[in-house]
Length: 423
Image 1 (cartoon, rainbow, N blue to C red):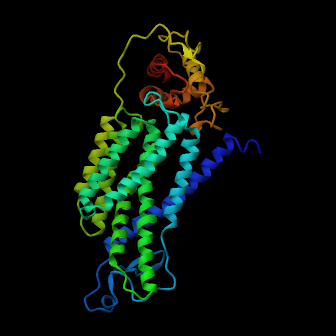
Image 2 (image 1 turned 180 degrees about the vertical axis):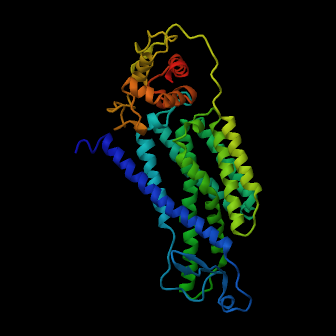
Image 3 (image 1 turned 90 degrees about the vertical axis):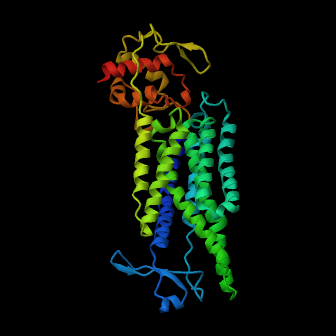
């Protein structure tokens, strides 16, 4: 039982909640994509037809899974309230709740390692968590306020303003938190806007329509219009959020010196591509949008590509290590950098990386090696040489928040070894 309440138990909790988040996210996003597609694909009935007389705005015939379907959309509401009415809401709520739980499990419970980078800002764990939660709440309040202004009547202008504000938030966060935490909180902020739309606008509006019909009153169409606008917003938010959800696997993005700009460009590409599909479903094919998105992604890939390392004179020795108390400690301190041997690199890796990347991690919060990458032996170091080089030398995002104080000289040693001897 003691094991289950330690890092091992937390890792299982991480797995199960992440699995739940993925499942509910697929359900929510699938429903969102489907209904936006449906709205863009339905065709109005013939004037004077029975459907038109019933108040049907549009219909669609589809075949799927061996059956035929005939969904119909009413301009405001049908004449009679059906007995069985499905509400699409729990997919959104469960996705946000499981995502928020993930923030606590992965980031807030281990803020010193996952959220704080002393080279960015010298925060305490409590301050970092406050920044994270404040971002979620503040993002929703600003967005919802803007949606209630005259900008709501100008979708393109509102979208541009929101994009600028989200990029501004990314800039602030990447100059406050670690790159990985900054990215995930931009995504969580957008996700909070999305679920806020469902909780505070879409579902309440639908309830008012249903309540009016139950009372025998004529529903006010304004509630349906507002819900539709927020649903479309959620549709455009989706691809940027999905990108951010997987970004923690790609340090080349969040570890870049201009990571906020990298994120802005990739999000813009996602919006352009999403817009193409929305137009296409409405019968308008505009290839300029996906082409622009692909060009933007290609431009980012070229712009952030690692520059070749310049040949520099190797220092006589690798800089002395620093232990947890800030005292000098010999690790590979006496290993000549010029030699850049596997054994000297192993010494660096043992002291700087193996506290997490080990069969038996000693770093608090880790029950197993992240990503399954273990660096206990020289054979394992050689096996993962390319990853070590990329993360410790090129991206410099490992060790996490540089908690183990890897020096520039040690990174140079690893780089020299990889370029001259690893292969």
